[in-house]
Image (tube, rainbow, N blue to C red; front, side, top):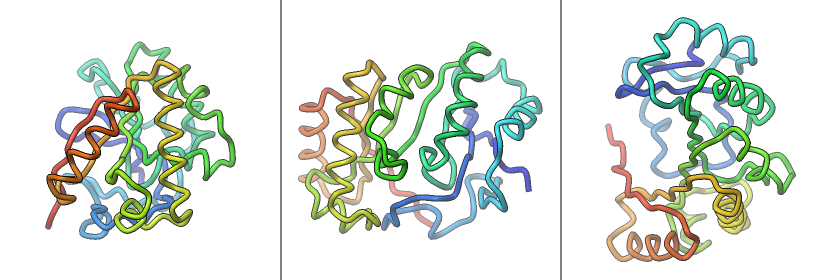
Length: 200
């Protein structure tokens, strides 16, 4: 099934992988197989050529930006992202990465914000908690509470490297925690957005 590129609410998305180091309590993958009418469960991960072929099937001029966001963590496919994103930039599009910010732990490298700043215009990073214990309770990372600290370092790196950075939380965490996360985002120099939890 070639479900590497899909359209949702007027934007174009690239689905690079289904791998993810987290098992978030709120993840849409727990309740459905896709977004809209698109099944995003991959039978294999796409190559650069696969993505190019799929992009050619869409009327690209109608989109303002192309987003790396699928049914997994895009930075788990860093090598392909590092080929596709520069290609998209050469075509004249803005690029956005939706991520949990744990690519450094997954790829065992600390320079990812610097690397992606060359071809990613904006990032949306899932914060979801203002402290490590709650983050692990909600996101259930394979890296334990180290994941929270790694995500915060990723945020700092993105801000420092000039990437338009937004931190997001899901709305079920409660008003007090939403406010605590807002203050943390402000402290880190990032924008902030509250996301509606997707339910059945």
